[in-house]
Length: 479
Image (cartoon, rainbow, N blue to C red):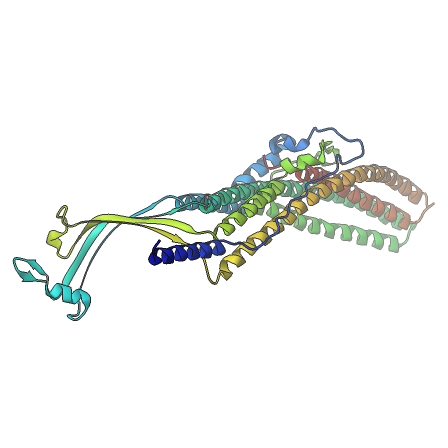
């Protein structure tokens, strides 16, 4: 073996050692997610029937509400903005798919140069005849056109993994849209039932004003016969005026809620069609909660977090591949000549080239190290976000189950309270007419009844809201 051969071998080994050193990656910690949940929401509860599988068109019965939700899902501006984000994510898949395929471009160019006489090329041209004994011209042209191709060979699957990351992010954005629809459906339902509750409040207030006006006429007659004082008349007048002022407050609240619904529907303010006559008779549905593990499949926000976690884990592989050598092939074929009249002469002006390239990072790898560590940190962050979404979902369901139970007991007691107070008004009026109680007792009975009915209406609204929130918490409303 010659000395020259040994030198080449040592150089090859040295280059190989540098490449292996360049391929070294920093240590990172891959965190695994914890998806453990209790077996049931209540002890001994193992029924897997789940209301979340019911579509919102089948869950809600009010045709006016169904129409509003249908319009909102189509026209809501936030939903439409999200749809464009999904389109961007889908386009990113196409872009990343193209990165691991060969790039082929077509190009043409023209130029010229003059070499100095004492340069190497100039000296050659000075003594090289071009044709018929003529020497090279002082200014030499350069014309070319052809196809040029570059292709990075995806040995480490960096580009394919990057494309798969884009796919996962696209799927996550679709789940994000589903979660947005879930929230939108719940928000429209909340606002609609709030509108019905306000209508009931207004109706209750107007009935109470009518009762108080009758009472006012009664005390005026009693004053005429000197059976009461002017103070009673003034107190009744003040009470009627106070409640009439509340009518305008309720009307304003109704307008605000109507316009909130219109905003969710992506349109300008206009009256909301509704029927509030049966609001107090509405019985919230009894929902089937299934088992906690079903949340992982039913909740769009959990599915979104899971897909984002998968994308973050794959991004670590993409970042790791930056430490490895990249292989690329460059090729071109076309025509080149120093004069246009020779450009398409074949085979004299036909030119072709092909070259391979291997490049690996060696010195100052700070950027790719930081990118790799960032990818690892984002993977850990995604794990925590995924776990947080699971705990949040489970907690929301448990809270609403408890809320529904307590509201049911609350409503029954308030119903008894309203019934008793309603009877007390008639009794107070009879006793007042016979001068056995003061007018203040009548006013207090009417005021307490009004407040109790108001609380009863609000409790009914809370019951319906809890039903809607449990449906949303279980993962329903996006289908």
